[in-house]
Image 1 (cartoon, rainbow, N blue to C red):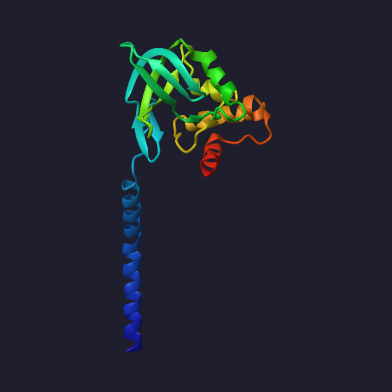
Image 2: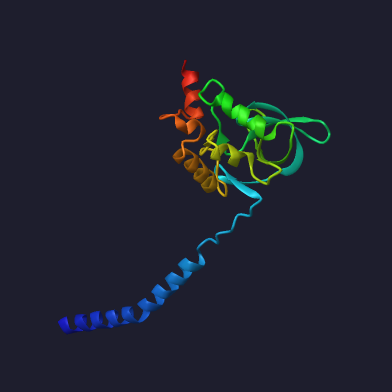
Length: 198
């Protein structure tokens, strides 16, 4: 009886050794085949919270109003004023340090000049959210960041702009440009939150 059991165990182990490598190889192949394909996001797309948001439309117009460092009004070719919230950045509020300087910087950079508007979304206030391209080819957002007049609005900024925007912000911070000359500048989203509590 003991010998019979031992033979059965040996046979079972031999069968296991024979079939196990093939099972492992199949499992590995199935795992590789089931991996999702990572698609490259084209430059005309930007990532917004949890989804890819494509540029809805692209048009040109003249900047006819500057409300603050991250909100402007652009006049379309058919003379319709469109209020625009700059995508991916947050400038100091007007009541904050550098709030007025940020507004002045935007005015000096693009007021009464033609820009290209790359619409990405509409915010809860009904404003068009967009990237603003200057005649130089640079984005207004980039100019604000590298001169220290805005933070990257991380809550709403995604790739392919997040990394490059953060690099510009860090460069301005290291050089103590604009608002970064202060030791502890308050991000505008925290400022607004504190104002709501009052």
